[in-house]
Each structure stands twice: as structure tokens, then as C-alpha cells.
Length: 365
Image 1 (cartoon, rainbow, N blue to C red):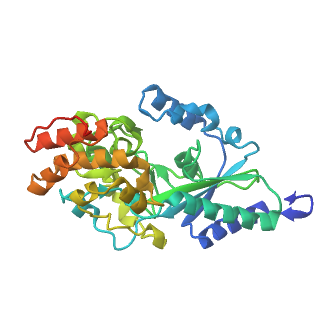
Image 2: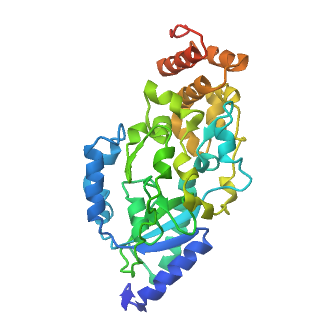
Image 3: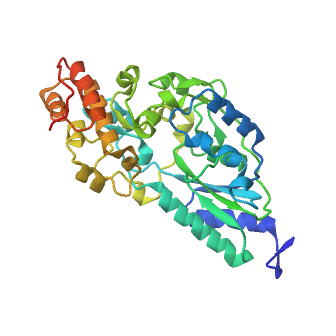
């Protein structure tokens, strides 16, 4: 027992249970509480960085130990309240149907609807407000993929799942189609039991990766990952990785699609995660025709905007290069052959060459 603001005693065990209940009432699907010791994860992260697997994601090393030592990022932190929220929207086109449709663009299921960052951060703030109503002033800070936070390791320690061989968090009752968020706090709450690994001898995710990015169990070379190539990478996509990308234009879900644990995945209850603009199976030619103004308007409030317009065209050009040859595909590519962006022109030329056409890569005046 302790006291809040020197007034009323606090039963932290009861408070922890209340926090989990309040989290569910706010729309989170599960919450758990973790301590802040991440020593082994810090070593694992350093080995990953030493291998250069982070590619151009310089921010992964820029923050030093603040990522693995929560109290350095938010002084006074004693516990982390970790939450998860399912994102697989109902009535979404079957992922394999889109992947098998060479004329459609595949967008990772998490990015089809509203960007989750603000939505979850707002609900974490409401959770903090609810806690404040009971305990008075306390130290906290909310995070949703917005700072150097080891979210998967903390969620594992909070009992929300284990980090699978594909390096994504897996939950025995809900698979892996969910977002994570954290509330760093100075409250000495009781911690939950860490989840154990249940991947066993399964290696489906490793063999399913189109570009061989999962270089070993629990080891991801982000430089080969399609999510990195289509979102984080701002320059040219390595030529040897373009064909394996298929029609994936923003992110990739293959390692999750083949995971046996996703037979337990839940349908999201958040309506805002539903696909917008039929992006769960939109035609590549139509997407490639979007002007920058259309791109910005149609992706407002969506994670897809992270690719940027130039990256959007670059990614679609690759997918069109991998699409079945047709007059429409070739005409769409030729329409961007003299695009002002050298990156776009390069990938369009590559795509046209895949269809037996040669073009110059000079920009139009």
C-alpha cells in the first residue's frame, strides 16, 4: 500500500486490474504491465545494428540506450502499461486473392484504413486521465510507435505475446494482426508474467518471405524486407529485389499470412480501420494515375502517406513491371517515363524493359 499525493492509500494490485478493465472499455483488446529491465533485448538490438540490418533507418541507433532503458527516455519510469488493438477489418478482400491478382496493388492490411497512431495515442491519454482520477498526479508518457521504444519486448514482458521467428509479436489467442501502444508510468504496479515462445519447430514465415529478409529465426535483415523497401527506403530499390516484390506496393504480410497462429486472429471492432478507396484490391493502373494532389487527398489520415508521392509511384512502377503484360499496363508506364523524378523514371524504365520496351530516362522539360 502507498499513497497518492499524500492523501489516500492505493492498492496497486487492484489498480492494475482496474487499468486493464479501463483499457478494454476504451477499445483496446488487451493490456498488461511490464517492468523496465531489457538487458538481453539491448544486446540483441546492438547485434542487429552491428550487422547493419537497419539499413537507412539511422534513427534505430541515434537514440542510444534510451530505446532499451525506459527510465532514460522518460525519467522516473518504473512500469510500462502495454496495450494492443486488433486491426484486421471485416469485409476486407482476402489477402491471397489480391496477391494473386497481378493487376491489383497489395497494401499491408494494417495500412488500409485510418492511421492508428493518433487514435491509439488519444485513447492512451484517456487511460492516463482515468488513472489520474483515482490516484491523483502521477508521472506518465504515452507512446504509439512515436519514440525509441522496444514495444515488442515490453509487450512480451507484459504477457501480451512472444516475439516470433519473423520478429513480430504473436499472441496465442489473437495471432499477430494488432497494433501496440505503451504508457510509461512511475506507478509501482505489479507486473504480469512474461509470455513464453510457442513457435516450436515451425519455419513457415522464414520460407515464405519473398525476398529472404528473415535470415534466420528471430533475425530480420530489414534491408531486404519489403516493408522497409516500400516505406523506409527513399532511394532506388535494389534491382534483384524488385521482381520478388510482386504487386506489394506498401508493406508486406506474407510472414503473417502463413503463420498458423493467425487462425486465432480477431476481426477488429474499430470501424475506422476498414479499407478506404477500395485499397484492399485497387487496380495498379488506376493508382499509378493519381496526381500528387489526389495522393495527398486520398491518403489523408492514413499510414500509406508515409511512402510519399515519389515512393508511391516508384513502388507501383515495380508492381507494374511484375504485372502481366498488357496494353494498359505499358501505356500507364509510358505516361510516367519522363517524370521529373529520377527515381520514378528509373523504376519505370526497368518496368517497361520487363515488358519488352526500351525508353530513355530523361525528364520532360
